[in-house]
Length: 130
View 1: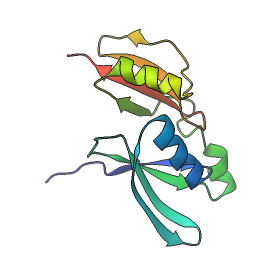
View 2: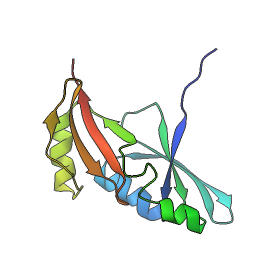
View 3: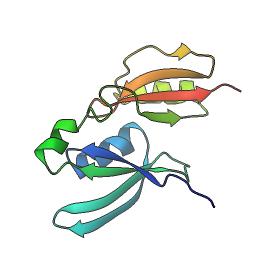
View 4: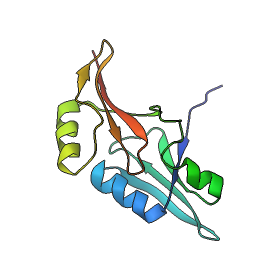
């Protein structure tokens, strides 16, 4: 038996706003944008060159969901953007206005810095050691 994670869902306020941010700020690719009716869409984004897990953008539809936008993990990092060019990506992201919560640091496992997406969710940008 073989399994893998296909998508991770991220609550957003607006599909088009989130698509624009992820494509212009992080350089993500729009893999799929399929209307589902009733204003719902199946929107999948992914980092350039990635053939793995995608990020499913889910537009918040209830008060409870809208309240969770930007704090899906209670303020903790729950999304990790892995790169093979940390400093290049870090400088590019700064240049297009991505907010970093800290200066980059060296950890035993990676070079890492926490940044925020358009709703304030914290992410790690990291380049593993070795």
